[in-house]
Length: 517
Ligand code: ADP
Ligand code: MG
Image (cartoon, rainbow, N blue to C red):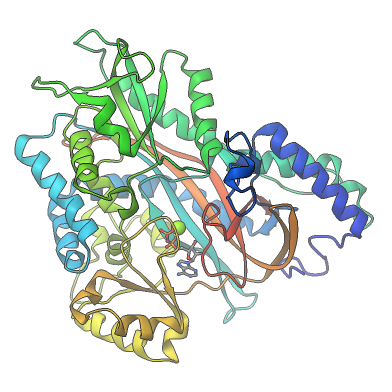
């Protein structure tokens, strides 16, 4: 059981009947309110649902996990500084060129993205505005060397593309608040109503608000078309309701901003770039091709990994978007700013001989920058610099490697190499390509316990929680002027402490919300 609060047991012990009641309440509330995903084929085979009408509740914890208030506040407080930082990184072409050079030898994907930027730069970008819907992810690091042990939110990674789960995170905090009012007080060892501190997540309004701000900043169409927003998605997306909740929010708060879903593989079929100096992106409605819209904003929930680029046509499609006048969320440069290599370089402290790289982007001596520094953990290059050679030693040693995770420049889960698997993996990769990885110290959160409802079954045991804090930022890529910079709600994801990856859609993690302690 959780040890965060001395003298209490959390979550409470459940009898079998109590657990069944709670599961029933969660199953119904989830479908009733859209805390749902499309089922994986292993749960409902395609031939059992040929019309694709089935939805199941998203994997979720039975109770909100206890999360240190101090770390929650820390993550929220630092988000606007992070927004500014990543807007600034995305504007620094020389810096990104250097980063790409460091990793591109072992990484075609990053190299191809950079080529798109170079090509568009040559003909000139026509859209100065850039939209970021960011999410900074943290785990609680417990330092046992102090009494009492100190707790700090340490950054796992910073996402600049397809930051997901905003929609489901709001619903999960609502679900847990509902259960805290109706179900938890009825448990024998129950939790009295009103005794938990359960912060609501504002992610849906926050993220949708960012998209709406960009839509409004895009001028009326000179070509006489209505404007629209495109959600660029993967054709086989199962996490579709998470995205839909953002659409529904936009439909209710900005009814004059139509949203269309477009599969990444359909970009060149249904959009054209106008043959004008502005290069407006035009979207022809597939069901009614006389209806043409000018795309004001492209919100990408696809295109973040090599899987979306099976052939040259897919790369052509990304180039086609990038050279258009639509406001991109994100641009190629902002996507590159979100690489783990950038995170490693930013997190490298200043030495007696060299200033910090962070200082290139924000004043690194302010209290706000101090708060940001506190979220960094040790991350090392794997190149042939002095620090890189030291890291290689740690990574190859079967004992020291146990404290690390090795990461390539990839997003979306399932790409990292952990602990004892690192030396063998490295030996399978040509040494010239090691520089495309970074080596990160493992964050060691305090033990927390919970129950997870996944695919109708309850799993119980130790869990690890990961806080995500959303941020929205709209800025001018040329002048640096920032038009919007907001913290935009939170996500808590939880995984069994035996699982190393935490992606909910990837099937390892589940949705959760914070019970602040
Ligand atoms: P991705 O871009 O694939 O999401 P992440 O850097 O977020 O990559 O890593 C995936 C998962 O691996 C995280 O959600 C977390 O559970 C785990 N992880 C990553 N870095 C660390 C770390 N430094 N300490 C502990 N766990 C980590
Ligand atoms: Mg992640």
